[in-house]
Amino acid sequence: MMVAVNHADAIRLLKSGKPGEKQQALCYLVEHATADAAPALVSALHDPDPKVAEAAAAALWSLWHRSGEPETDRLLMEGMTCMENRVWDDALAHFDQVIQRNPLFAEGYNKRATVCYLMGEYRKSVEDCQRTLALNPHHFGALSGEGLCHVALGELPRALRCFQQALAVHPHMPAARRNIALVLQAMGFGEN
Image (cartoon, one colour):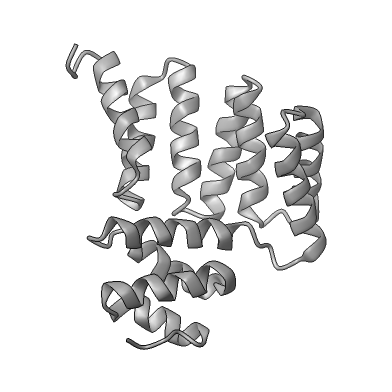
């Protein structure tokens, strides 16, 4: 088995390696991926091995959380800590600062969308999900998050489209499958 010792090796193994090699490449990319790895990681979400797809999703999240600017990354992490502690106003303030510092960093909008959703501000959350997707069209988390907002707003056809798009990007995403089934049932198309 070949060992991924650099970025180029990891991407090559991810594209054409055996399952174990793909896993190893993904372990490397979780820590070291740069933006040029994103297409290979998005492609790996479609791998027939769910473990490879799950590791690719983890590598994408890791990549998405790195802006390349230490201060922006610090603010993002502090905002996430505030969010975990349910200190919504402080979390929003941190994510606002992230966006102000780097308006092209999609994850700032995505995290602010999450806080808005948790605060019940669904329209604001939808706006930030859409900003996230304008910057990162493969952001399955933002697609799913927007879908949850549309469910909360009673906009079931829109929610269904969002969950279907999330599943098209990340076919092994169980939450998207469950949410599609729930929305279809609520629309009268699923099992009762």
